[in-house]
Amino acid sequence: MIVLPLVQNISLIVVVTVAYHYAERKFRPGSWPYRLLNGLFFGFAAMLAMSSPLRFEEGLIYDSRTIILGIAGTFGGPWIALIATFMSILYRVAAIGGEGIYAGSLSIASASLIGVGAYFFRKSRPKWKSSLPRFWLIGLAIHVAMLLSQLLLPRAHWSLVFSSITLPVLLFYPIGYTLIAALFLESEERGENIHKLQASEERYRKLFHNHHTTMLLVDSATGKIIDANPAAEAFYGWPRSTLLSMTAMELNTLPQEELASRMAIAKASKSNLFHFRHRTASGELRDVAVYTGPVEFKDTVVLFSLIHDETARIKAEEEVLALNKSLEDSYEAVIEGWSAAMDLWDEDTEGHSQRVAKWATDFGERLGLGEREIVKIRRGALLHDLGKMTVPESILKKPGPLDMDEWVLMKEHPKKSLEMLSKIPSLKDSLDIPLYHHEKYDGTGYPFGKAGEEIPLAARLFSIIDVFDALTSDRPYRKAWTKEKAIAYLKEQRGIQFNPHLVDVFITMIK
Figure 1 (cartoon, rainbow, N blue to C red):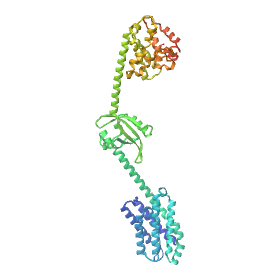
Figure 2 (cartoon, rainbow, N blue to C red):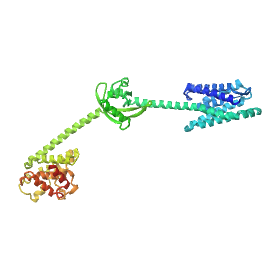
Figure 3 (cartoon, rainbow, N blue to C red):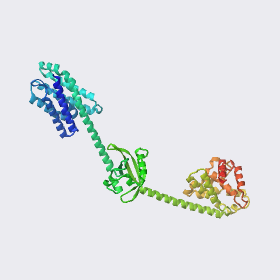
């Protein structure tokens, strides 16, 4: 019979607490109005418990006030516990009285103090605060203290009380405390999640809406624009309300299927940088770089896009490319002019530079050289004999063999080419052929006597072309050879004058 009233009293308090839990849903002891309201709630709940107790005799009652006050201290902190404790003791003394005043008041105070101690302990150990078994231990400590407070009763009373209520109090009250604590834990966690969400939304607002970079949130499935910051309004020229009624397809010039494919790639994080052309409200098309990737927004995954206007940069690049092309054309015109001047200076080799330049270009392509390398080879071929303009005409056009002194002067023309061309920055990369095309594979050439792979590739391949064209052209001192005879000579000179592999490639090419 003693157990039933105690369980009923606990059940009443649990029902009241559950109703409060779902009505309030927020437990914010940091706010003074809420501290007061929560303190009053816990005080009235304790008074309610004391209004329907287990009575031994007049003024000697037992109820679940200790559960309420322990919860007030554990989750509300010292101020809420103080308000509830004051109300409870006042009610216990003034409204109930009797011999149990001191024991009852002490049990109220000890429950609040243990609860407040648990409150501060939980604050100092965040990982500990959600363990239900530990809350059961707190509930047990509260009710052991409640039983010990009964020692203030006369011996005749406390011995009866101990024998009657010790087992049910230690069995059911810690469980009741733990059940109610579980509800408040859920409220705490929900409050923390709400706080984190609010903090996250505030960070999002500051990052998204206050940033000077154009930003959009786009539904990756439909392409609908979910949010746009003020920078996007300024860039596109539409107000935010209009942008939020649009889709990414309306901004982009790509076909819808292609844009959907790019968005799928971005959502899968396979790529995060894309280059598009976007429309603005004025109808202008702007070149943009879009940095985009998936983010979670309001329980769904969307594409967060940063848009950088690249129109000015691309226009500047195009202007630089056009200028470079103009300079390249100017260089080519100058080189062509020098080549023509050499042909006029030595009419016996007229057309030689143009022919070998064409052969050299074809040879470079056959070898798989890059475009830039082929350009350097062509320029070097056109200018390969520029240094001969410093050779006396009597030597250059002599019908017979040159004597030793004349050969010394003739062999200087590669170095003269270097002197003439090295002062022009744009031609420094094209000096291999003018400087080394008279070197021989076996090291017996001039002007430096380089051998094998020491000779730059451009000069090695050009020396074959230069000799072949010279042999198959009329010169003052001999008639042109046939193609077959010239090829036979190239074969004889494999590994001597020429690179063997390059000879084979060249012969294959001209056949």
